[in-house]
Length: 111
Image (cartoon, rainbow, N blue to C red; front, side, top):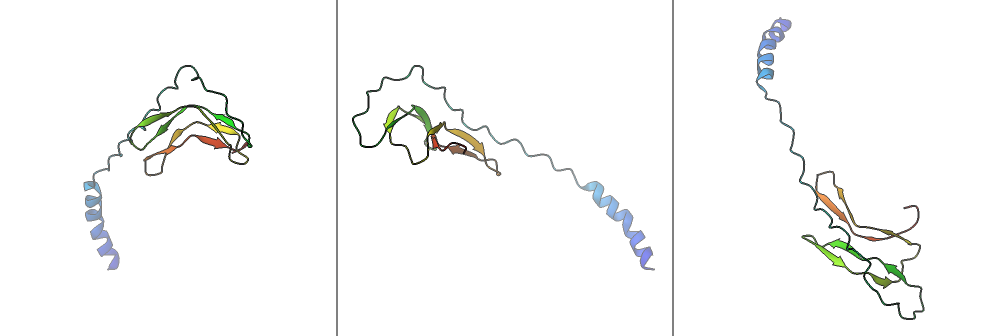
C-alpha cells in the first residue's frame, strides 16, 4: 500500500522537476582597473644626503587611491629589516569577485 503512494507521486515529482528552469551562469566580474604604463625615462634624482642608516632607491610607481591611480616619484628610503626586493603594485581577485589592490612594497627574498 505504501509502495502505491510512492508510485502515484512519481509522475508529479517528474513533472515538477521538468518545470524548473536552469539557472543561467553569473556574468563575469568587471575587469580590475588597468595599471598605467610606467613613466618613460628614470626621473632625475639627487643623491641622498649622508645618513646614519643605509638608504635605497624606491622606484617611481603607480599607486591606487581607491578611485584612481596616482604617480609616486622615486625617492630614497630606509628598508624595512630583511626586505630588499621591490614588488610592483598589482591586482588580485577575491573569492567574491572584488578587485583587491596589492600596494607596491619591498619584500624579503623568497616571499
